[in-house]
Length: 157
Image 1 (cartoon, one colour):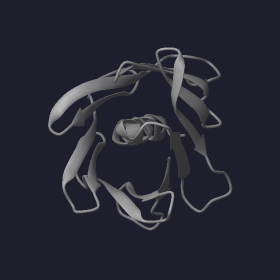
Image 2 (image 1 turned 45 degrees about the vertical axis):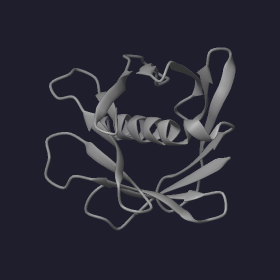
Image 3 (image 1 turned 60 degrees about the vertical axis):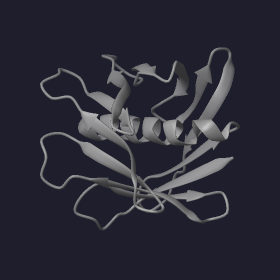
């Protein structure tokens, strides 16, 4: 299964449209316009909020909490490194490995790859592809990608 995330280029806030593998609209992501730190709301196609990615303030490096249906389910923290970005992920029991800088990485559930994420280059606005085998991982994978993108954006990448 696959999701395609496309950032809207001409928008006042971080806004993304999320499509399924057939090109149908699946989710919509919109940031709060005037908030301290990032607060990205994720809505399904019917307009129901299904997740929230929110930046914790007053931290040295970016930290984002991920809420699902109003309950905080985990967080990601950007780690201090000199060259290659690294994240501490405490979310859904997952760990991630790969080239975050080039946006080619795998998310593991135990020893198995649950999600594969890539960033498509040479696109107008950020475009990400999320591949996953288990339909239950769809929303969690989307929230994780949004959080990592926000962490990179916070540091000007």
